[in-house]
Image (cartoon, rainbow, N blue to C red):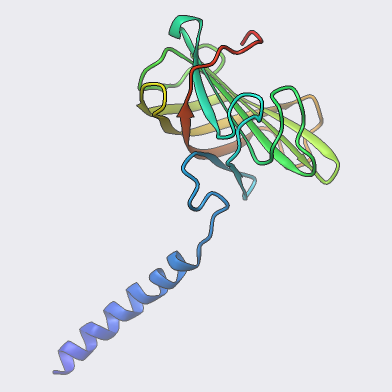
Length: 185
């Protein structure tokens, strides 16, 4: 009997704190069907909006007959050529082809750009190294999903969120739409 009590006590000590921690975690994208989530310098960002003049959800669209795919999401409402009001994060991803794949050549087979506006300061980060993995690439109306683990370098504005280079990890599930991007990638 003492052995059973000891085993139950050990299991409770191991599993109860983990359960409490997991159940207390909350995400801005909780319940969102489509999102681009990432962590940069310990700050978690959740982009659960698209562009009001394109699609209200974060989206992906094949370009130029499928030779490239464009994906985007933002943490506030805006148009494609507008800026959200208040603080925001904005992510754009371009990758070669229209299929599931793992991309490891930043600037050649994929490009990831992250814009963050916070506290009146505008930051830009672009991928220089790392992996972009597309695990799901469905037909129009379906989803494009995957993850990234990237090294970023800054542009436009001087770094203020940390030293260069920075790393980011993230995941995404965006709506696949039929759309032709009005600007070149």
